[in-house]
Image 1: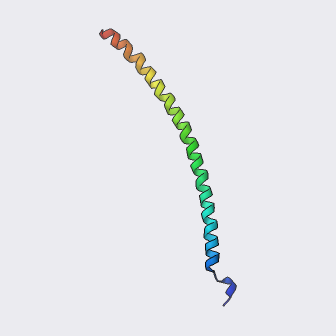
Image 2: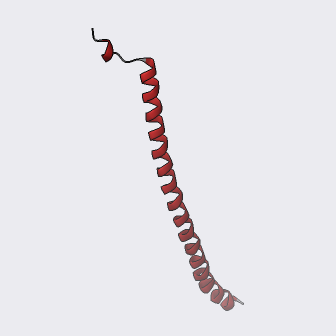
Image 3: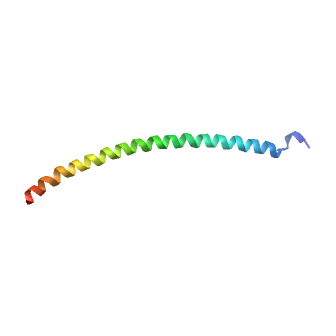
Length: 68
């Protein structure tokens, strides 16, 4: 039996810590991308709401004038 080929608890602990830091880094990068996209979507959504409001006002106000 080759004693060097055995996996020790210290080796596993170090390996799992390394893997955890790698995945944490990747998750932070993905979260940063999602936050950036969310900001862009929010800005586009606000513009779209204003455009819909203007169109509704341009349609409803002349209709209300005809009723009065």
